Picture 1 (cartoon, rainbow, N blue to C red):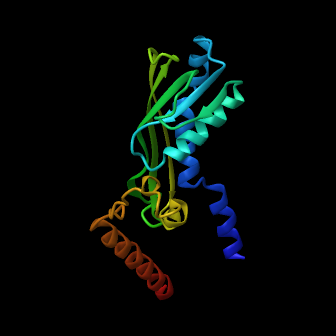
Picture 2: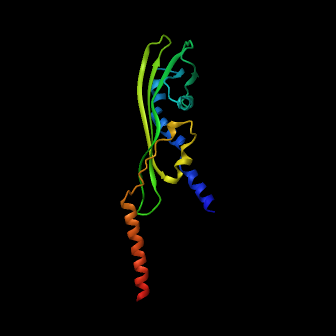
Length: 196
């Protein structure tokens, strides 16, 4: 029963990939409208730079533009093209962990999770002249149980989805002292009530 409950609870928490996608969607939300303002109905897309999540960025942008009625062609940087080109450079796409805390003095550890995306987009006409430049960003934050972090990270190949986890336990040296004090108080109350 406990295992089923934990599986259901974990299914409700977005994975690092889903949190990164939310940040990416925020970063590209104004892109379709900006392209439409220049009369773009079809565009070739090139993802430049060395980010290992470029495939994810490309896939998401293609999906969003298609949903907004813009036909997208994916091509390599060296291919000739007669249509407009959207060159997207990921400046940042990462999931990081922040502060570790506990909701009460004693309780399960929780860790802050932050997904950040920053993109630089340039629209070029068929001659290679710059028509538009756009720099956008998106941030998503939440707090997840410390014990779920490993399951939420995803593939080890995608280092941009698994940030460094702080060793801060949320209480430092004060936490064991407080826990010891609470336990000692409970023991005292138990024996003092029996003596009466």
